Length: 144
Length: 247
Image: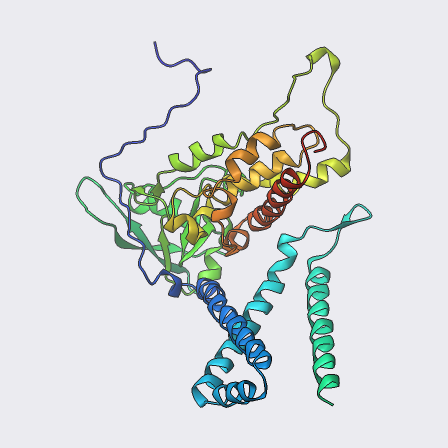
């Protein structure tokens, strides 16, 4: 007599000759989307660098005129300028890819209907622009 | 347009090969033929030893997922003419052990699927005599998208996290957990959360987003996982902030 139909299914966990390919360390170069994903992950290092740079600036401002001038000289070294340019690229890349993904993570419902993804992305970009303008205004108004 | 197209098909014959090789077949490239028709032509006319899974031919059964020219696809939904002049390269789905030719071993997914309890969980079952659990169209629309999953596993084949860490519960299983959590008739979300909030659950996902791109039924597993992360975070915050009884 075979197994009863009502019994839960049992699967065979053992097979002597499965082929299990090893995943190459360069798997992220195979597809454009994987490369974009890895670049987004790497961008977090540069986001971190911007935070460190900003904290150093705050410390220099707190340290007085001499410390501030010293910091500005250090920040003007070509190597640091280059690092900051690369960081700017990655931070913008991080922000753009993140805002493009935001509609997937936010399912906002209004009057029983789901708000379209483009509107959610647009509102994120809008908030970004407004915040940037606000920060620019504070800095520029303060430097006058 | 060419009348014939070349299909390069991965063959793995475990009885006499250690790793897969490719074989080329010339198949008719009719306008209405999909890749699966090409495979069936090979099986019927050219080489009866070729092994692959298929059933419905209409994107419902989820059996015929394979890697077509490097992309995870349902072969019943991939037209041969879209790959003309060819060749079309066919491999088994990535991230799964290969049993033979284009057939992968899917026990891992089947077992993960049952752990998330993909059925309606009730604290107390109502007697049949009291009738069905009723639901409004609005309540249905909350989870309907996630209920379209056909378990084709293309999302697992596309997910680098699953490829690198096979412990990861994976996109379809989490989307299906969300399908039942959002169902107004279900009361099992707390039970599922215990499993899903483990590292191998939602937190292993790094939001690559490929699962959603390859899904043939527009289920959006990536979205389901991110929304689940938000729910889980809010639940833990509530547990932390609110005293017992006020939750």
